[in-house]
Image (cartoon, rainbow, N blue to C red):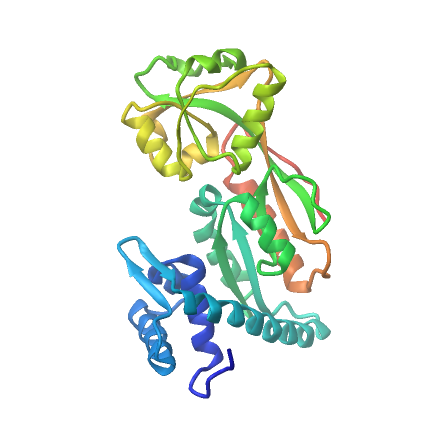
Length: 315
């Protein structure tokens, strides 16, 4: 697809941000522009090309087939422009240009606002883009260059990325405050987990893989009542009495209503989920990337709830 004479880089950037986030309102926050202005620019792009690039739904927007084609081209174009800018700025050792950071959904819920505010305060010459996705998706995006760096849970060995542990989080059984999960947060032996109907993410989810692996080691068969991807939806179902979840304390805190649930840490053995900072193994980290990594490391440590252990390793 050739770049149409009526298109410009700013419109392509707006379009890509909306497509990545699946929402005009989220994209407007990241881009720091008014939502009506953002919508108008994307609509002008669609009008100029005489196509529909996005399908508006009640929950946001999704790419059309032709929109996906333009998105793929636009990401490549923006990466080339960003690298050219970064090369020039890096020669002066000034952290400038554009960087894309990937966050898992529950982490993004806690870190997006402080990350945006800290980034604007400490890196005023740089531009930040944030995308959310499951750790498996973020790993792929970092490996292919779509995302510059990100936080991922329990990554499997992958020669295309380099990872550094930043936070250990204990996992526990989560149920409503008044439930047979037990009051007072008394630890729960892993062997007893089979007695609870569980609401878990699908098998590709990092936490699900960790839980299934530990259950297999202990020769346990989990009672999986429902498979739901969204942590928020899982907690809604738990609250309504449809089962129990296995989550970290920070994921529970990100729900905005941790007081509505009871959590019992899993023991014998303890189950720990580790959050890693990941970058591509095949391209050098720019000055902006190094500053962003330090900033993200600091924010993770600051936001960690009591009971979590932060690693102080740095690149």
